Image (cartoon, rainbow, N blue to C red):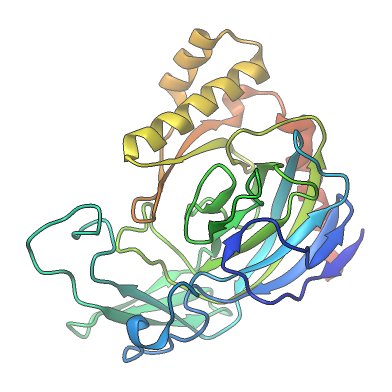
Amino acid sequence: MRVERLESEPAYSFGPREPALTVPPGTVVELSTEDCFGGAVRGVDDLPSRVCQFPYLNPVTGPIAVEGAEPGDTVAVHFVDIRPRRDWAVSTTFPHFGALTATHTTAMLHDPLPELVWRYEVDVDRWTCRFHARGSDFSIDLPLDPMHGTVGVAPAAHEVIMSITPGAHGGNMDTPEMRAGTTAYFGVNVDGALISLGDGHCRQGEGEVCGTAVEAAMSTVVVVDLVKGAACPWPRLEDDRYLMSTGTARPLEDAFRISQHDLVGWTGHLLGLDTLDAYQLVSQTGLAPAGNVVDTNYTMLAKIAKDVVGVPAFDGVHDRLRATAARYLAER
């Protein structure tokens, strides 16, 4: 088992640039990521508009080039371990950003929401983060559910896309499903694929409704792998129970349609079903959690239980990477 450590300067976009690390398929990579504010928001008085500089938000670590990856292939990123590396995390509301306020594309006459910061106490030993209300003495310990909001590869055709924007390359999809034990699949657009990730969350509700999760710097371990000759049109996810397709677009119903369309096609391919039979099966068994409804594009997921499908996806890559992860954790 090959293990590499990735050290890189933060980047703020997905696109063609020199890899920070080049590895063969099957490599375990240890890395760290900064929070979406670059560590500048540390307390309730650190308003992002004062301490952060646009567009230097949502930094990502990478890119990781996978040897042999070329357009027409798919790379797999399996999350082995994600854990906060500080004893605090933050969340915010912003004027003109979030699912329940006016935005630059949803213009309203009412006053914008105030800019506020919530600081969470993070206790990795107890595996909790503590919410403190701003307007009362209410507080509650919430279980940690660490995940990465932003994971992806370089887009096609030399395009450069800001790290806050999700799309067919991945990016800032903000789905809580991107947790330890999940394998994410991305279609390769450039040689090496160029995988980057960041935007760690201690936890996040579906939709990321207020616009931010419990934002935290993370220590993360992944295994990267390569599936030759299998193009993945949209990012797909797999855990021990579900196969998941993603869709990213505006309006939200188009993101829903993309994810459902991809899952119908994927299910039909795996089971040898014609399109309408796969459509019927997904319609009666599928789930549709929201990734985010706040970013520059919205993200929806479509899920189907692996017990329903009954055949391995991508020739069993997820199970092989789970075994690699288990060996790494046992030897660490």
